[in-house]
Amino acid sequence: MTERFTGSFTQQEPIPEAGIEAALAVLRHGRLHRYNTAPGEVAETALLEEEFAAYLGAKYCLALASGGAAMACALRALQVRPGEPVLSNAFTLAPVPGAIASIGAVPVLVEVTEDLTIDLAHLEAMAGATGSKVLLLSHMRGHVCDMDALTALCDRLGVRVIEDCAHTMGAKWKGVPSGRHGAIGCYSTQTYKHMNSGEGGFLVTDDAELAARAVLLSGSYMLYARHRAAPPPEVFEPLKLEVPNVSSRMDNLRAAILRPQIGMLEDRRARWRALYQGLEAGLAGAPGVKLIPRPQHEDYMGSSFQFLLPGWEPERVAAFVAGAAARGVELKWFGAAEPAGFTSRYAHWQYANPAPLPQTDRVLAGLIDMRLPLTFTVEDVARIARILTEEAAAAARAEALGSVAAPVAD
Ligand SMILES: *Cc1c(COP(=O)(O)O)cnc(C)c1O
Image (cartoon, rainbow, N blue to C red; front, side):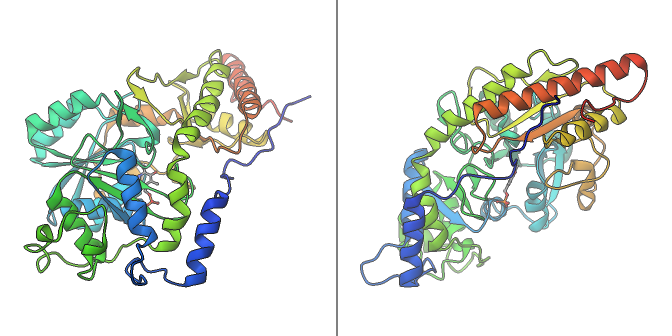
């Protein structure tokens, strides 16, 4: 009998009971705005920032309305000007170039390697060609480049780094939390990330002036003294009349939902890694499938899974994806002609007028992506791996016969 999978690739775990209770308390007292506090009360948002900063060992933390808002705020805090070139890796998600475009700056996209990380040689070439002084580095799908080499290169080039840690919250490089290598780290707490408040984001930094600028930018209405993970008021004094309010605050309801989740990140990493490694083992022998090596120094979360189908014709990839879908396995293909669902690639971001990137095109042409929600079990991922191995074998047989793969399922 043909094996099928019936789980949902978009079903996350529920909000923990402690978060639900805390959220109800906020709803009952009604003070949802972060600066609406009773005498002596510390807002949930301020407490969340303090706790997230402590978790990462960062001096300063600001909670924001989304990960995209955090990246735009970080770019503004670094005083990136309209028309200024900002470097970013071409393999990322739409909110990253979108954040650059939102402040009128110009995305300069950099090639990706087969390991799905930024190509450092091309980064140097593009920094030289454009004179860009800022890199918005996206740790896309949790793949982290050699951060020592990247940091050394950017220091040498005088390029400041903002890290997009939407997929690396809780991950580390050589023991250092992701987001702590550059000038600013940005995180998302959107439903599909590692902590879930529906929408939300963070920015962390050790730089007092950047932190003060970010707080003012987020819309602090001169109430910045109520923050607990922000620099002292004297840092704000010379800036407060100069920095515009671009309202993008987080509210106390989301903060209440998030606070109990910080302490769950370690356990989530262990559970994600069990799913990830189960899939990795199950796909090890799949014909025509190339798994992505994970560097020794990368303590990754594993909240999604990618593999390459190198050299496959587009029709064959499409047939493989359709065959998997017919058996309940939802794959995303970064080589598809049209953007679909959450998956678009750099050539689709026409507002950025992207130059062709042949190496990235080659990688994305065969790049398959899969969500791994924590509602899956190790038995689930073993089943998924069996289905994908059979579909890859069917594609290989069809290749040998010179026809497009007939899916295994009827
Ligand atoms: C989700 C995501 C973000 C931030 O997204 P928001 O929806 O704005 O919170 C940033 N970068 C990447 C790579 C993402 O996947």
